[in-house]
Length: 356
Image (cartoon, rainbow, N blue to C red; front, side):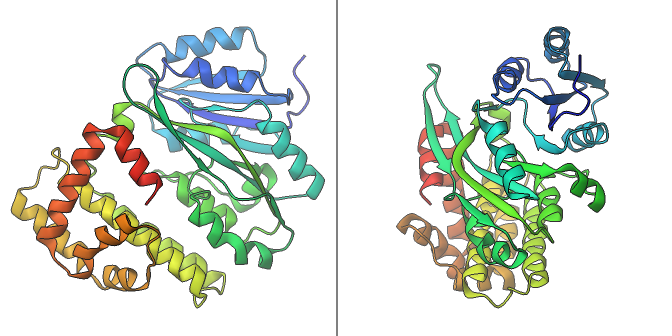
């Protein structure tokens, strides 16, 4: 018999992940919390993803599979979210996996402390080579409870600083609150972050679990390397605007620690935009690339950020030199080096990125 109401609705979009989907679903089946439903949307896969899911669903009533035409991850998540019945909602990616106690520990903390949101640590597992070798980076903050809105907002910059806010898969959300706010994923590249921002904007009771339950896997070439995104800079500018707006809404736009975090975050992502332009797949000429980089690094936003940010490593301080000097040609050559390392030595790139 299917439970009257699952405690947790797990939402999972799946597109052409037949190499990974079984591991993801099995990590859910191995959860110590048994009363959940998995709403997985096969988003028009052309491989065996849908067949594997159907086979697993036949043997587990908690797995509900939808086969939709390809509409992208935001539409797939929203489709499942519209059908969720759980008290809580948890979002998971189909090429990752989770530790056995994740759902139980999140639900226990949320119920015990009447929380609107639970945030956990996670692993970034970056694979390279053919023998399963990988680097392991942990993102987390110490266990904490923020029973009031004011306490949460004052501490949020530290959670942003550990990259704990940008994705939905290290969080447990209260479904009634999602529906009350009418929060859904936007039909855009990098849809995760605005969903989280919409949810936390006026959130009140938040808990943090230090343990890294989630394994975010960097393995597939199309996920991490050799991809040029022509609109990346515009997206990063938009994100920066969202951050500034959030902290203005919170009344913390004059707080030194919060503003330093925001400006450092912006300048780190600006370097990523420079690398993106230097990707060989970029269709611009060298002259056009340098001109675009010049526009990026000479903007008022970039110069304010480079003046306010306090880099955490010598490497990052060195990477900011071309931006401070407003030297687009130097920044271009720096971007070419970063792009080369990113595409040809995943281990070194992941290690440098983790220690930036």
